[in-house]
Image 1 (cartoon, rainbow, N blue to C red):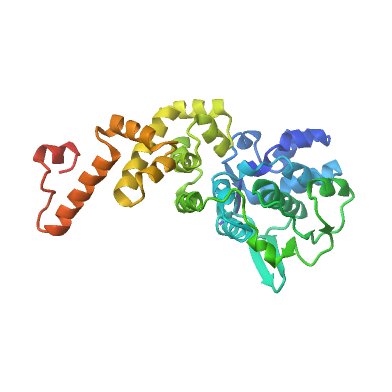
Image 2: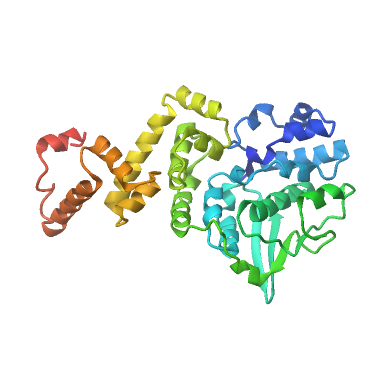
Length: 360
């Protein structure tokens, strides 16, 4: 299967290309990529073409630091939904393990492995077999470093960043972006650090939000390039809500789109952001109240409400009863099924209610 990577990997490409004297559109065409493919950061592009673009751009510009400059344009949020989990993991070890587990949601060309040998730990990164590019590795190294150093709040630096390739001519860019010792002509590509630092606490840790984000990320592999923007938005809104963002700008940031582009494309598909948000909230409220024993206060927080009272007011408007009343009735119906398994429908159900669901 052809390995792919998200177009967000090329964030800032046109600007960096022009900065070093290249025609970005000519370079994209040479690599077999259309400029419009970069309009949506969530587009999945052939990884081999991305790597060819990086290699060609470095060679034609004479800048062996091209991918370092490109990686410098990336933000923690550009990791997409995975960033919401990494932000709240409890320590460095958990953050690295989450990166390894969900790397396929970032791209399909990367291999990550954590090795612990006594007092030393190594996070090694490689491209999958069949793909080779020192400039691709430079981009991976820059993004990985910035995720762990600038993204999460560990206030920590690795002991060294390692590159298999020889020392670059434009080494100043490496030193500016990677603010720790660097070793070239190394035996591996990755970073080394004290194994004790794996226990460094994340100051933004929130176990409940991390667990919730992890459950939601487990659903994301079903998302594919052919899915509509609304379908992708629906998959990401639960994580947005759990992190206290309930506006279109928050979703646009998470999806790597401008606010105007997000709103326009949702309208083109037939539904504005507020309608999508409302539907997702209703679905989540029913799921959390009916299928879990979480407190109503916790559910309010997961749905983006700062107080239980504000959640309750919204719920009454949407469902005609309070969350506690709805849950009580639901659990009562469940008990009817358990205690009287010979009944086909709950005792309080009527034929009219049954047909109203569209079933029959």
